[in-house]
Image 1: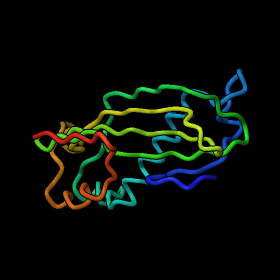
Image 2: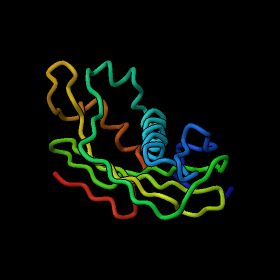
Image 3: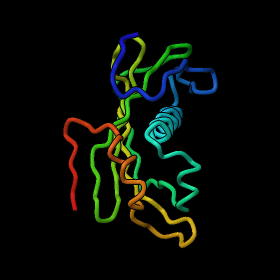
Length: 148
């Protein structure tokens, strides 16, 4: 397997991730990308405990999956995760996830848009200043855009 940058999930495709057409089912792509994003956030300092400390959590507004090639049972995949957009004023974010087969072929791109949710008020909130250093560690895409 070719080593790539910003890989936050690697794994074998299991029986439960296969559909009737004998390839990886649509929701399994979303699942492994969510795990990759969670792994990345945790590695950058955004652990569930840290989120709980500030009573916030990430939520998604949109998830878009674009398929290129099939992935089959027992194949291995890697998921690359990068931040594509961030709005400093309202803490809205966008991530791109790229799912690669073991042979390096890009099979799927998953784009998500989200924000931070105050878990007490159940309303959108800004990222606390104390968490800004963690945000700076998140890998950015080539076309990353930041707005105020």
